[in-house]
Image (cartoon, rainbow, N blue to C red; front, side):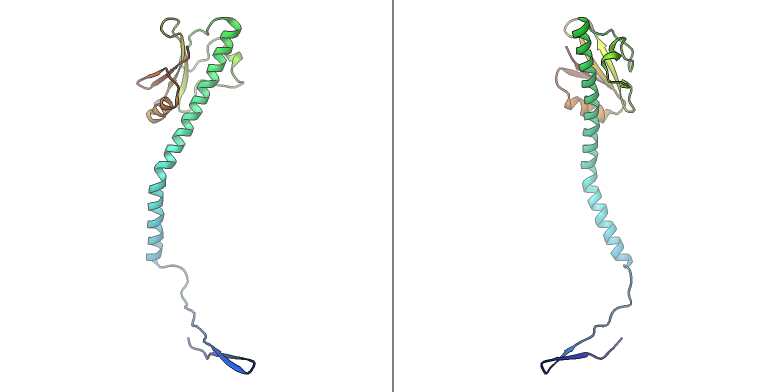
Length: 161
């Protein structure tokens, strides 16, 4: 594509502006697209482990939050009745404790189940166990829990008293 340069004059001088031919090319080549995909893949590989860790920490924080809800309910129960709730099956709210839990609160969740423990003896009296088949979630929850605590298999226990 060729064209004549345009001319313009200002104050009697002539300035020639060349006209640049525009390519008929539209879009990107396959190589350019592959380079972009490669760069995005590298960035995703760098970011993905960090995102997974952040998601796991957030999920563990949810578990600990639920443990704390049960802990407050248990201590409120004990303050009112001068006794600890009785032992119940895994995922079952001990009798009388439901009045101290928020409405609709369940011990059985999608990825884990809470279990109130009443050992009734020495050295420990009560605790809350998180039962989960998700080992990374259980281990991260254990890291974030206060002591005393222990784990056995897929059970992660926080001693309350």
